[in-house]
Length: 429
Image (cartoon, rainbow, N blue to C red; front, top):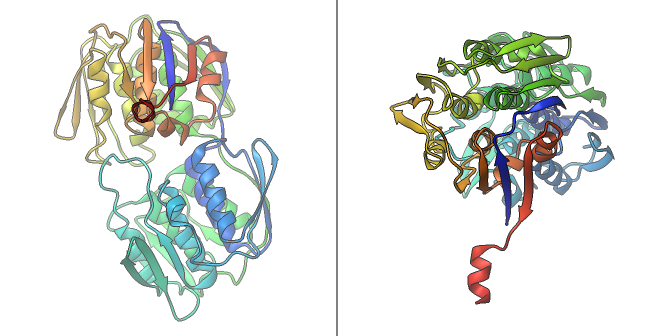
């Protein structure tokens, strides 16, 4: 079992380079299934979700070749639908993009139910609604989602009941090679949807409107390979921005798209931080004091739900009472109990976190309850003098590329260690 040990209380200073965006890389990787040929994907982060995704594709016949640490050649010429390994698929949420890719290319798909972090109900009903609108007959039995059709997907008009990022991506992927034109209304607008559309268009798709709430897809008969670089990770960047402020440091964060960070920058400025924007970087300098603020998570371009736990960790150190209202996921609050272990005066009231800032935190054994909750307790530990141990860190490894190494570059005293598993010790004794 691995743990992260943080000896906190040291301000972060220096420069850090952001990796490729997990949430953009995953749908693009699975969209390669549409292509009978080779795709070169650049700026791919070294995280476990990516590793599992390449294993899933390899298992259905794709040829994956690592060119360097961040660049891969993906050849899906010989993939077969319905062959993905159930135990691999259930390890990550993004594996459901294989449904859209298999359906788009073969007119059928069979994939196990996805996994991922457990922080509330994340239904796939909008995905199923879209697949059925495209002519698919969808069944969910025995832990699998299966799509059958009379041939290729057929273009249509789809109106999503809610603005779903995953469903928008999945239907856009499936419709890229459908017969006729598909129009998605009430589409999600996140940057990774634009990135996936740009990738597909580079492969020969005809997609317009990505980034707005109406996306138009004119289906093409086939796609060709391409070379494509994934956008930088706005959530990793936001996490380092928050860590810089929480530790009263100053950090230049490079390889970013500042526009993607505007909602995060605005809230950090409300806490007293100074944000300077450059072409592909932001400089974050903590203010003399951390001021209270209120946050409501919203779909892009609003404040991202994936930055909610990190902001909670920061606002534990603010003067006064802060509020974070979670409008996306109804149960994204498991991290709150871990911050309480460190002495935070924080509580959940319905879908709102109430944070009484200013109470000094103390080190304590904590766990990463999910990917972003794990980063929240890490930020709290970095800002708290003394040694904090974080367990269940495999969840952090799902989405952050060499997080400990990057923090050490900024002066943090942080290390990942391997310790005996308690269950194995009991068996041995």
